[in-house]
Length: 302
Image: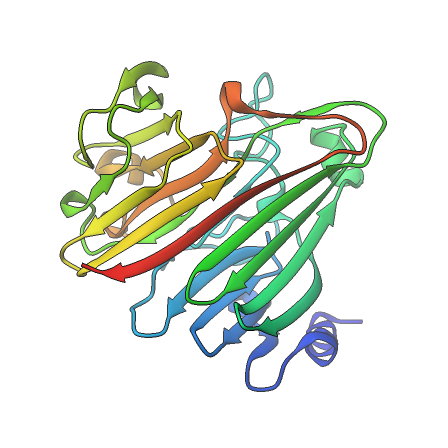
């Protein structure tokens, strides 16, 4: 079955008329488009990656690069990529793909359901010959996303093998902002963090966080974080569970120069605030066990 026929078949099986449709997106990659009662949105089967969420009454919440590649084997720049089973580079293997392999893998669409909470899209992927080349573990990963007044993301990992596994994970949310230099992050005061721009030295946050330079920090906190954007007149809140770290990232002018899939000046238009478990907070999972990390994004007017 060719790609067009496969997309048509997925829409026949899972589409909800007037609410959810499976169609060809950028680069002819299949996607699910949502037009629910409380939000519009979009999620690609490529990486099970959310690329749009627009709750009723608000502008688009997520950033997408105009220079992003839309093809198999290449990560989509923007939206909410899934980082798994490692974060940043893989230890002892510089040739391994950054942030793991599932964000460039085609996932399986399992279900689309509409109820009072919104429209829930579930996708899954599992270990295969390609994943074992980089990581020998046996696993099944499920991403369940609810597009509603809130955007709820549940990432569930099951150890389907016979040996323990250890993994890092992150929901790498690109939050769209008017100007990154004008926003403030609230909820991190007094939290310890590891500054990756300074050899991962541990530091302590004082007050609200302003982004004034290249930022790549892993905060050792499970607390909620508010992104205050006065120019857009809104507050984005990240609530999470089973996540011990919050990563904050923006490449700034210098870092953006080496990102070929980021348009000129677009580094000003986003800040990533990510539910994660990385470094010393990586997850250990025994055979037969499951681990679920949840992130909930909400928006309100300032």
